[in-house]
Length: 332
Image: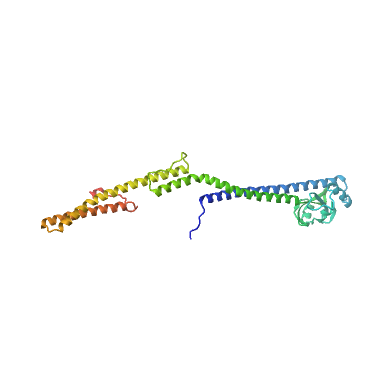
């Protein structure tokens, strides 16, 4: 069965749309990654700043005794969150734990719901910072563990957390926008590719129709119009006209060869026919020899002519004539 082949215009349109969609996908992915990284960096920066404020407030108080009530007062001023607030609301939740991970104070009940990462607490107790992203109630939370330095020691660790729900909502809307934009871009790419290929292939279609008309009618004296530009279409039209010139020349030579051959074969045949008719009559021996000899000569002449025609027919093949150096002296 014959398969239905996709047209060149359809292939070009589809290829243009796919390339356009691929480029848009790469740009969209890069944009999404940049925005995601930017949002996370902003949250990390907010956590760092709030952590320094908490530490500054405790140091400013000048009390090295980490009293739970005073710590609660300090962090409540900086994070006045209430227990009725949910994790998907914006805001930073603060909790202070000792180096063993035991809670000392927290800004709200929400802060108490954030799990304590023992490895991160140990890292902060050694004077280093640690970021974690656990899930609390199905919502991702960005958590910073930083040391609480009082003098030269680190008696406690500050745990600061902020919900990623607003950022995830923004990223979800961005994903939807990128998907919708991709669909629109695909449709626009298909339509734009179809218009571009239609405009680009229109001269080719005209050229094809003109050549097909010439081939169907056999009027090889006609020529295809050549555009003024010297682009690919112009060179194709010039090539077609050169090909038509060669075909016209070959047809003229063929007609001339047929005419000359017919003329060259007609005379010997007439002579042979006349001599054969003479041989059918009761002629003297001498006249019969002359008629027979003349007929044989004409037959030899036609044989040579036919051999020459066969040689000309074979001359189109690459191996018909062998080109090589020869000794002219031996030929002479």
